Length: 454
Image (cartoon, rainbow, N blue to C red):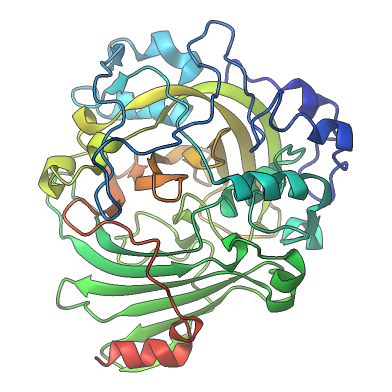
């Protein structure tokens, strides 16, 4: 991999893959908001100006937008700067991952990347910036990195020194306090045929609540609660999943329950983790692929490789639009490349290698994490033969009503089977609702049983 380098601050810290890192000094923290953004990204432009300076991101929605709308493109006049195809991708190898290059090799006639000017649109509420700065000097990894303490609301490690700190930043990036959403996923065959799988999902995020204290979070030991109910097709409708994710995953591992409509009962689901197949995924993703990575990190060694400039999906408002139908997106081999926008951004590079004595169908995963949002943007995945297996990409936008950067669609390409799964399809459904209050009592096993019987 070319052009990977550490930023100067990271060089001064002890770079390790597990355990406690060197404490961030008060002098370093003063760089947040000056040399660095409040979230810890490099504020300045890159050397040739192709990545501009961060100037605050999107601070107001485009004219005419109202909460509940699919988010309109704030950059409708932007034009394609250049297009990468199978015939010229080698000219851009230093800003492509091995997995992205593999997609050109796998689909030489159809896969392409349309590259636009870089817009550093990521932004967050002021209280998230404030809490992130507080976290910088107090947050700690515990239990060998399988838990976290003394962190709340903002990312815990805006000046990371380890791969695990970067991954926890991704896990705990701000996405509001709660959200309900309609949408679904599809896993087209090699010919492009697919069955749409619909979901109703809700997520309550105690960690992100304005004013949350780390002391209270550690008492409850809950990071978030997630509930998913299948709405279509009819043969699966009513099947449901409930997950409670914990801060200290050694003290209390993830708790999960499923409701099966055929059995009409709720069962504990300890296997909803790691490489268990994702819900109705045709075996095209693992449970811990959801949200690009989730769950306990204890089966891997995490190495912070450094930072590099990379082409990643960004400001994918065209792909998000309610003027687009699922049939317009879902094509044989990969999603419609005419709907995807790529930009050059700086990313953190974290390599996860499977620990000796543990098991997972993925032997190695290389994560590329956007410096402005801590969203995993691309992941290259290798099998136990050390061959490229899957390539995941998160297509991000700014959700103006929060504001926050989050994916609108996540796509995992299986380059061996020449299939893919697209998760988060919502173009033909109502937009995410970050405002309607959710109740804690609706995130219990008994609530899952009641809802499944309706």
